[in-house]
Image (spheres, one colour):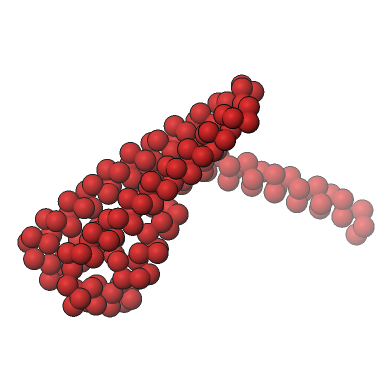
Length: 167
């Protein structure tokens, strides 16, 4: 029995190595090594994968695209639909724009490290730019929530909230 133990361990090790190789071959990789595939796609597609809207949403200031999805259920008027749709469209444009800028900044940081051309000043500059871009993106998202709430009645906000709790 003890003689079979090393063989059994070797088989387990071999199988786990093969399983890892198989799993790695099906995982999608980001074009940028400093971002995961999910992060990269979220930035490209204008998705908020960081919960930047939570401060507004948790305090009854909804995202415009979520309001538009429920326009019939919360009885939006045609004027409200036009105004809130415009906010949603502009927000999406801004999120895609900022996503591309963030990706380019990440590419620059990666490139400077890769070719060993960083100094403290450059590092401070690009790291601070990253924070600036994140802040600009979050501001755009929160501003859209604020503007959306301005076009809704209290009854519509209440109805929207009750529909969100049901989902």
